[in-house]
Image 1 (cartoon, one colour):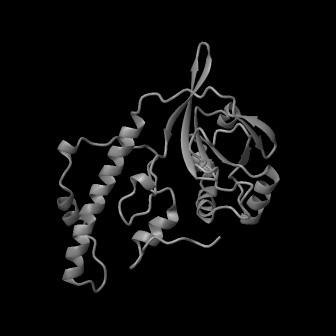
Image 2 (cartoon, rainbow, N blue to C red):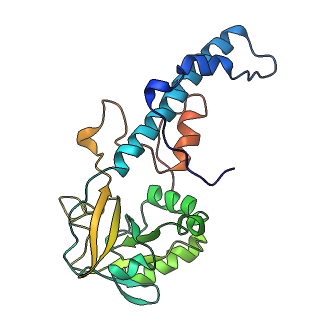
Image 3 (cartoon, rainbow, N blue to C red):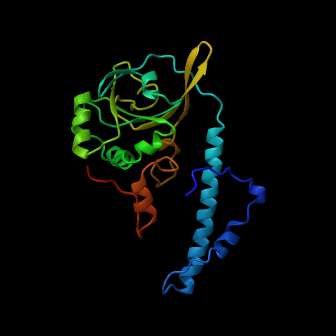
Length: 242
């Protein structure tokens, strides 16, 4: 597979999705004509979805500079205190995931846990281009113990301080409980020093959910939903056990 990322084509020069679906030529043993017609129609929709994902990604990358990070957020990492700038390491882009594992929880959020378990093996590849930080409000020893329990090797956890970024970047509920948050920050090196800015954060929530739909982000960060929800019959979205 090529490592280069192709630039999205202008929609004015793309072939109709239905035409590409008809040209795919894929067939499976003993399928009926009815199945093939329905699958071809679905394939056209999948092609359109891929195109829409590319358009949204292009629009996201073109966002103007976000707000400057002016507070001195502090964290307790697995090897000691770290600043917000330290989380960048040698990268200019930092991805921060706020993990729902506050001190009031006996066990962490099973959904967050599933997500991070899926990410763990990808971290070495993710970190080729960006820094990744997983932060939560539980004491660091508690975070490290659960990391060992799950067998995570690469997801490095940090505890947020009392004057933490969780409230500013929407990782707390109105009543002070945990909420998952996914934010991206950039560091621009200028003559007067490095400027850290917020680039993008997930904003989909209950207020933006369609009737009967889960308020998940799009594309969904969780591989498990890609498999459960779209690849099996009757694949309604349901919770998972911790």
